[in-house]
Image (cartoon, rainbow, N blue to C red; front, side, top):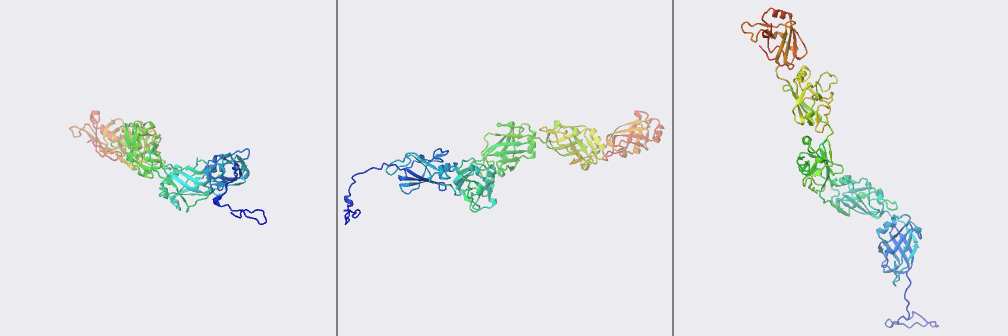
Length: 638
């Protein structure tokens, strides 16, 4: 333009204008061959920005990130890291100062490094040749310099997002800063169903460890217990809209030991990613407990035991079974604390039947389980996959508890006592001497009122009930004890460990004499006693009467007896004499010894032909002559 330049005359003549349309071409041109030099650097780990200053403008898009290295010493660095990438924040294509927003990968390396980036002295930037290009295309030379400014991270780290997988039980936490996974304290984390939730709609996690590397994202897996509580809390974590998280400040720290910014109930963070559980329930293992009758079935995840269809559960003795045992009458009584193991309890009848068959369920080699399709769902309704090949037991807990006496009934007419145990016993192990009758539940103050069975037998098969047939000698001995065996009020039973053994060889549990089992029924002997024989000693007047069962000598009425010379006292010439009295034994017995009175002996002596020999000695008597211990009168012989 005219006036842009003046000459040196006094009047200052202006330069003649050069119009645009007649512009002059440069007469001499020197190309820019001076490379741009790095003259300064600043590192801000609060904003995660690296600022590089140059001697002249460089192209913002020319940066080769791999040629930029940060280290903690100018000459002998113990830490160095080359950038893998980043974003240039400058709004123009060239500038003498580049603002680089660093990638999380690089930020993580810098913040985890010890003795780096805390002061300008331990913050050194080194660039390799060609890291930058100026506007003339000149590449930058290599250079190393100390940062003029190093800003340490002082910003509180924040949890900015989280995701949860109900399929794997994993939770990923995304933070605004580099976090140390070793400082994660999951007890500070609560999963809840809304931004604000009551305790009944939330689950505070148990203490867990994370194997996740340090960084912006920390991943951990819920414990089986936590999974159980999250899945079984009504309305919690069923979808993204019902999955929120709070975290207390002590939940985790960043690389500089700064606690995370707390997220409180009322401002809970909603899940940014939610993976529903759509996998079918599968079986892992099972064990059988022959003591309790429990089949413990472990699944791949939390199972809804209340929906188990027990009729689809079958015990087998092999994968190609010859014995199948349905547990359809059993009940799913409980599940483990983590919800993965369902406890199916056999009925007492089924357990006893199982114990009776020693070809199944006695060891892992003959214990298998088959479960049909759709037998049980998980918490989300995903039904089980059927077991295509029967699952072998991982353990069989053998029966180690002996059978318990539950009850008994006794029939003195048939001489049979039916004894019931809590589980099947082997009849071959029966031992009569292990059964003891007593008159009271507690014999502490009546030690004599007891009777140990001497001789007996059983033809019962293996089972919970043993039918014991007494020897007649035992029945007679019991009947002789008038204080025992009359009613259920005076009939109790104890057993010792020699009485019987169960199918596993465990001896019966001893029932103490202070806690005997009362009879459920006592059927008395209703058969009247019968005089089977008698002996008369004419020298001493001794008359010995033998009966078919125990009688009470105290009820003996000698005037009801008559000696006669033949079987028929009405026959012509027959002699008969009615006894009048005498002495008798007092203890109940099958044999009653009587001493005939002298008067009767003299009378018999005065009757030639009476009681002179076996053929002239007969005895007749009425039913009033004597009775047994139950009050039944003797069958008369008249």
